[in-house]
Length: 278
Image (cartoon, rainbow, N blue to C red):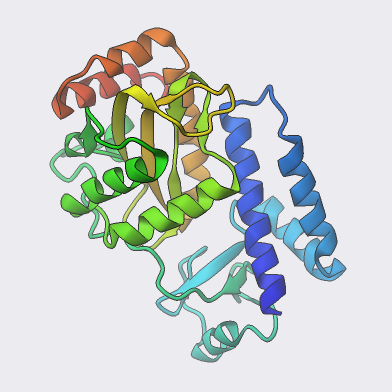
């Protein structure tokens, strides 16, 4: 049954990768990804595949981890006996409250105590998801792995996350599935199912560009590294769409790339996303 659970988790990640692709480039179908999803669905026991399909229609995440004795999807506690059964993974078990399929994962990535917007009495727009100290005008990185690691360390330095090395590894695993780079020199590496905190991102700029396996073959110059708690998975797609809409414009990208300090980036980012991320 562990094999089936792993299939479900992989299927869910592929579905999210497809949703991310549709949010960033809806005109270009991703045939290979669609075929991989269909193949995984066919490989599941029919009753479990049907169950997953029904859950997916109700929830952004149909398969969620148990965190501190509770369902990461609805946040409600589950009986200790059920937690033990989920950990044993001998049968597919579901949350008694919301019905999501549960799995046990050792060492979930963690955020520190919520800090985003803590210095601002009212959080609105982009300020709900980041802060000026998470802006990096000149990435030292020369490749994708170094860039993700550098932004992860920046978030840890300012106590937005814990264990940056673990987050970097998880983000690179996601990149191995399909690159998060899109057209126009943008990339959105991320880690999902982060424990605690809120949807948060760091932004790094590299004017000379980094090879990120973008679909148009161009180098990536603007990199958003995003950590996503389980409850925020659906909203992440709206944030992603807003950022792509904003920086799909040449003038907006050029404005950002001209910034020399974190405060300049933060002001430009705030101004440019005022309409797209209200």
